[in-house]
Length: 197
Image (cartoon, rainbow, N blue to C red):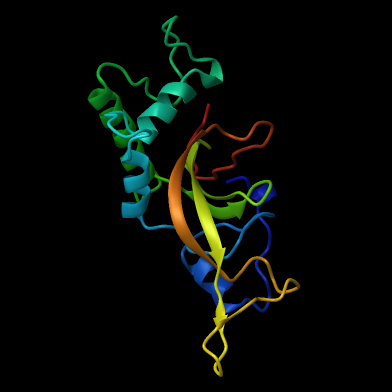
């Protein structure tokens, strides 16, 4: 999928790159070699309310806003080509969004086949998952540098600026960012043998 966006793996990979690759993640221009949050953390941030006292989850709020993209219209009854329109009470909308998340997190070809931890712009780190049709979700990752400890003083030592920026990070917090559509003008190229017509 999106083969034109993928980069080759290093001929002499670091341990971080080896772990990233072994986890089945993809490498693109913005990739950083950081293992993504586990499914429980992704669910927790997706199902967290956007505001205190709200019964509408972050995922449901994002789905309600995102639904109108791709030519869909809840007002005019035009269905989205992939996303389900959340309707009813806030609890019902949250349940609809949670069902979509459950489907995306399946460890099969029905779930996410594209998984990438990457830097977008202005050093915004995200974890992105996409299904075989190119639809997906993103979580914002608040990162911090791993501090190396000096053996003599046990104080943090700054990592030099010229070291590889793809490594040496840890995730401080995770927040659901939103839904994503297939990337325009790029053939998804699933190559699963199914007729897509």
